[in-house]
Image 1: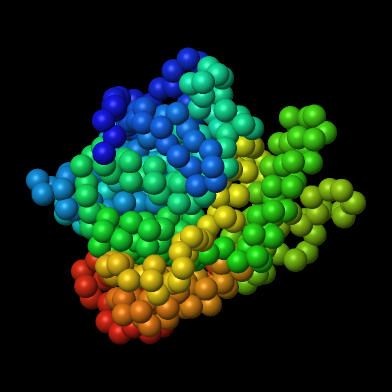
Image 2: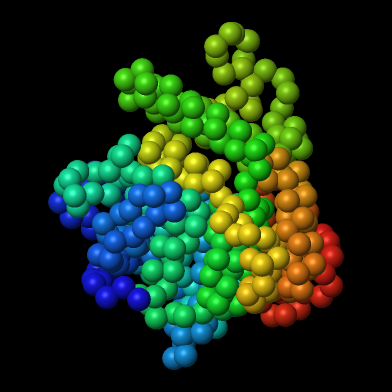
Length: 390
């Protein structure tokens, strides 16, 4: 357990003044932990210290055995739910609270921001103590395993030896699987929505194009063009976060104006343009690229001689949930993992969330997600095979 730790009730970054964009990215409800123990990364670099930013809801039990870790998705952060110090809606609002699926009358719900992101935990915007300047483009390459190791540092600080459960979607699901498989004694239950055990080439190809869009602008030496690349990367991503069915049902096919080349001619173009514009104020260029690459490098089996040997010490019970029409991480990847867990004697359930939203169903279909989470935590999921979400 790290020994040189300080804690602050508010997030602050030493040695530089935070910009308005920085302040907007960190909830006033966030708590900051500074861990000055060097942090080694999977791909050969290291960080001289960690700033760990988190929010929590509910109370930690005397035995410290009721913690549920919420692992953020790519665009997520510590503000998963509204908080007395920050009443603004969180990115998973409606799942956390008294009597809800993550019942704060029973559980201590903990959500940390992501290593490599831009929301308080050490990332490209953070100050490198060795230079006194922000890391920026020099921030090292990280993997999902590194993100989870940072979560474990936080759990050590809170003296939580074993989680009651870990839950997340997409990149968050990757974190839950890393935790259960790489740190088998740290978690009892895992809920993974639209995740995978290792990123396949098809998904990596999609992310690669998004990063290339940002790089083209940067190589032109223009911040404006780099931001335009970020806009396009987010627009591309949106096509895979949502489904063909939703797009075809949601938007009219007729032009919304007299058609002109280079103009916004259709409702769907207006929607994508809006998503891209939002990304410029919401994402940091370097954090976007860092986390996108971390997802592509994800592989829970990396460095192990066999999957069977890797799974031998794993004790968690798993719920893997697929999204219908998920074109980013298709449901056959969750089914394959489920079958692998079963064949190795692990407790595993697989469910399909019926929705036309696609990959982002875990963020949109809160009632269906809540029902699955509640049933699983209560031990009320029966049978090991595919069943549709209610």
